[in-house]
Image 1 (cartoon, rainbow, N blue to C red):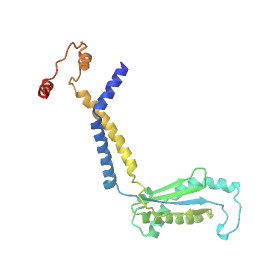
Image 2 (image 1 turned 135 degrees about the horizontal axis):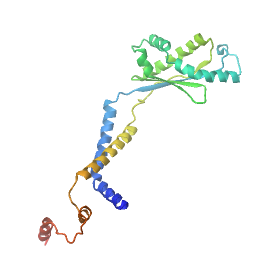
Image 3 (image 1 turned 30 degrees about the vertical axis):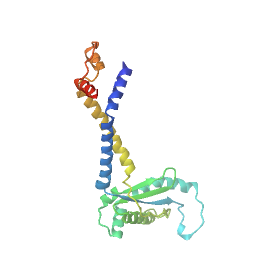
Image 4 (image 1 turned 135 degrees about the vertical axis):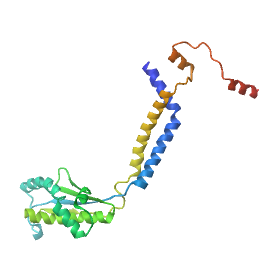
Length: 234
């Protein structure tokens, strides 16, 4: 009985395949239009910092990083990650660049990531202007390294990579949007077929009569239109 139900369900979807394809295509087109017309492009810029030896690197002295340095730096990674987004640092960045933005809003556009199993910290800034995103990220890195010297009286943070201007938005991906909306369209199409089939009470085949009324079909009468078509052909 289960195989028959699955077969009937497949036949139902197969007969409605054109409608399903149109629904899915409609959602894909709507998704692309929404992404291109209603999504504000945002650009990301990232700078990378490394926690090096606590010795004064400005003197260009060749020092060896000890196990103690590594342990201390590992513990400071999480602390530094939070310190990057502190009010004092963001306030100074806003003042230095002369940009008009509130600290809380800027904090929402700043992402700090500690690279797992390393002593690297990545600072990512997202902004509508790609040039501003790079400037803010680099300024945050610069101000942060200076603050570390003032607060901890050590010089163990170095800038590895400066942020560069992004050439494309980070929040717009037409392929992902198409796949996402195609999935939504498929779900809607399936629901449409199921609901339409539930409300469809018409009898289409002799098997429907046998199934619904549990009586055998002894004979069937051909439709008059088909008989007339055959006469005209003759």
